[in-house]
Length: 314
Image (tube, rainbow, N blue to C red; front, side):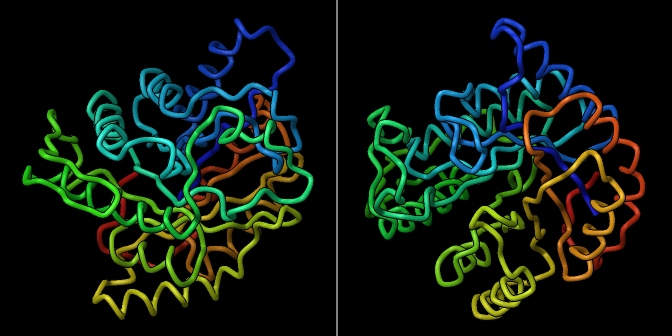
């Protein structure tokens, strides 16, 4: 099993001027300890699930990812996941490609439809939500899924040698030129985030190398993982895709005070087919929490998962 950490809470009790050095220590420790992946999240305001107010510090995802790339040598890097509405696809693919080239071929391209609703949930004021606060256009969810499929098509086009015009319903690219090319071949792994059974998991089967599901109890984001993987398997059969080619990831919580419980839970996840876990904590990462995780990283790597063709190398 693979293990990564998500750096999503930047609310350390320190001056903002010290944030860069703190993030650097976390990134280097994760790299040196043998963790497999390091993730940011694509938000401009802090989100409610974190328990922090929207004003809590939230650096931009791809700028942070580039900084992490410069600080590390082997760990894989991704945004979990890019909201399809936030960036034009040509610029988005170019951005991910740049990080891949400059990192020596370590980018994972994570993308999804964005917030799973059309109207604000109860208790959220527009001024506390990034799309309203920053004036970001946010199409209805059904349209965002249409756009997500076009983004995936454009990514495959730009990571190939085909520069012919792309004519979609929402995006038109006269020449999807992408130079320099990504270092990874045929392209950086594509991860589609979300667990919607009708649209999201079909897009995984058709276009992606990785899925990302939810194992976050108490948040409203906890999937029946075995069921979701069965749905993905059926979509793969429908589109003629080998299910075992797809890396199955999930986001889950980590309590540094009980690494034994974490390892036991990861064994349960592996038994139902999860290959890769993305860990978050109940607050910002610190060195004791990283050290505790590092103490069991070899044990996590030894957890058996089904053999798959096309698996990402460690």
